[in-house]
Image (cartoon, rainbow, N blue to C red; front, side):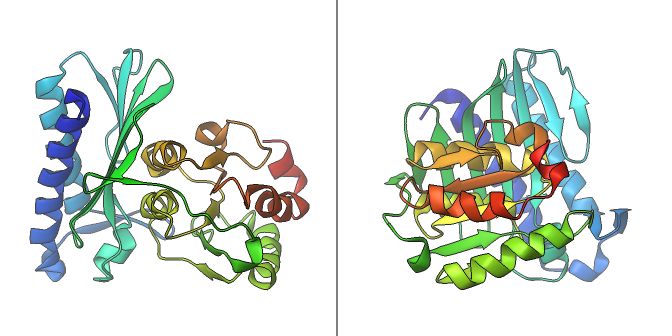
Length: 267
């Protein structure tokens, strides 16, 4: 394992311990609303601080983009992109589907990724050019060749409902053209599940960099395709992401594109 990835794993596991301890006494947490349906707890903050402390100690010249703390040293060649608790709403409701997501970007290119599910002790890792792994075992995207036989993950609009009408059109057509849709509530884990072959594809509108940076590299290193809705590589900029195995990707994205609003087309 690359030394930088190994350090990120150490940080993710430390954050996982903080989260699991807090999960034993949810009612004692201080919870704030960042915006409508977007919550932050003291656990998110403590988890991010622990991650940054470990990474900064090892790599003091690196920059950071954290969901809770924002940018620091954004002109650095290396920038760590951190979601200290992806699936905060699930966590607060004691629904055990949340994770820690850490990615390293080098001069605009994602090179290392860690997604850690503390409830299942599942550790997803990837290094660019070296494959994707789950608990040190190589993983690959699914071999499903037909969209009709595929299970697709997604995320509902929950903060900004401007794109809800076109999303519902996508959703309706996906229901009738797949084997089923799933919405567990953690985009990072959803992407990890595509990499592991548990989901055959995933799409969502308006995500943040920390939601998708690590998961996208996992999918690519597992042999999958990742793009924005226009089949380009602007998903980090737009937050609109499609991930799938190569066999269903074309049929999958056709449904998305067919139901896109003009605003989404121009992003």
